[in-house]
Amino acid sequence: MTTVNIDRSIDARGMPCPGPLMSLIGAIREGEVGTVIEVLSSDEGSKTDIPAWITKAGHEMVETVEDEGFTHFIIRKAR
Amino acid sequence: MSMQIAKTLDLKGLSCPLPIVKTAQGIKEVASGELIEALATDPGSVADFNAWCKSTGNELVEQGEDGGVFRFVIRKK
Amino acid sequence: MPAKVVVLGGGVGGTLAANLLAKELGSDAKVSVVDPTGMHHYQPGYLYVALGQANGRWLVRDERTLLRREVDLIIEQAVRVHPEAGTVQLERGGSLEWDYLVIATGARLVHDQIPGLVEGSHEFYSLEGAQRLREALRRFEGGRLLVGVAGVPYKCPPAPVEFVFMVDEYLRKRGIRDKSEVMLLSPLNRAFTIESASKVIQPIMEQRGIGLTTFFNVEEVDPSAGTVSSLEGEKAEYDLLVLVPPHKGQQVVTESALADGPGWLPTDRHTLEVEGQERIFAIGDATNLPISKSGSTAHFEAPVVASRIASLVRGTAPRENYGGRVMCFLETGNRKATVLRFDYEHPPAPPQPNNVWHAAKWMFNRLYWETVPQGRLPENLPMPIPTGRSES
Image (cartoon, rainbow over all chains, first blue to last red; front, side, top):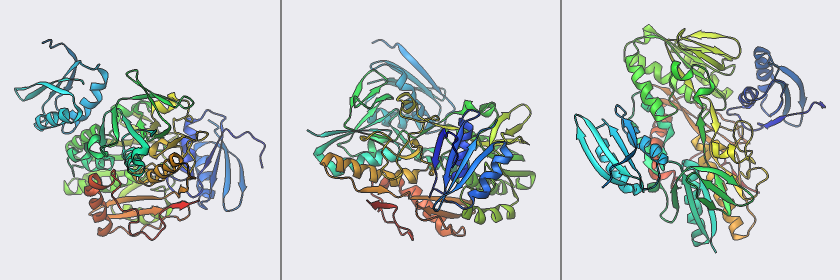
């Protein structure tokens, strides 16, 4: 697992609405450039949704870590 | 009796129940015992202001109508 | 000596929690609700007002009429919570002591966070906004009508989708649908947050010629050019723009140093305790939980908070947990609706929109005032999923 300092962690496991991606977008909008956000998601769709938005919005996927029944997505706000 | 109005709320053109909603918000800005004046055109205002004052304990000191504009003077409790 | 329980906020969560606490504890507690205006809004109604389907009158009631007699109502703005001292400071200088505090202060709209939003767009997230939008729709004679989201999270995730469906119907009834383009600007890569619901909704949008633009998070509005821009770098032209405004937590929360950045309270997903605060609980839109900001969430959370505080007052171990239960209707126009029911353990499985769920939604709209805030709605509505409350 990464040694990057996580500024904010959002546990969205079991919360399909508004969903991990929307929670991530909110955190990115509120944060400063350079801030590192972790989102925990148990939703399979996040594995495509989150990277797709990050690419489109120009942010950095620092790391993705599989855990038991969920995934850690670690993202840095790049702009 | 002094009719020094501390605040006037122009609620003309607002539809029910906005006049009451805005009065509930606006009355926070005056002190206890002070008078606020509300001007509304919505015909439902008469019933609404009477009911609201009775319910909240704010005193409806004066009410009237002139050319389609309803005027309410309320003393904050 | 009765325990002092103070509830900040007289919305659905606060009112229900206060009533349940007073009923459960009787003379063992003195329950007070602090609300800035003493007016309780049924917010789901704003959508109907905007579309000319309902009068604003039924949306607002005096909070005093919804509270049990023994619950105090203090109509004042709370300005700061002092957790160690166990007090809450009020705007006019007074102060209230509490043994247990429930923060149910909801979310506020921050229009000025987005340049051009106020001058260039409409919203149905306030009564005034909904009435203005109604007038703008009456004057609309055709053109590009765009519906989008200017900040996340926001109250009622289904609302923008419901609006596009209902405005499509509205324009057809007025005979100007063929002169109009209706488009949903979604912050995500699909029409709606819940994937299974999107699969049901998107085909209906296509059938009705309602456009969908994905990954569009509004950054700026240019009223003179008639354009709206996204942080993803896109721009769209509009003739009538309807946006969900940015939301933040209330100032009393941010002023009290209890909140995170955007002003939401860090809250335990099961116990609903505010992080690090054994005597402070949060309900509804005020929490930072990445769960739906909806009335139903507050409705299902309130009994858990009331039960936990009652246990603490009585000196027994609190057992109730919030299981993440949410239940939201989603109107799709033409007297049809679907329903989203889920909890932390069970994902939603929304049915094809039908008349039955639309009728259920309207029954709920009509029964709300006599049932929900008072805690009269039976907990176990016919549901295929568990209640979402569990005992630890």
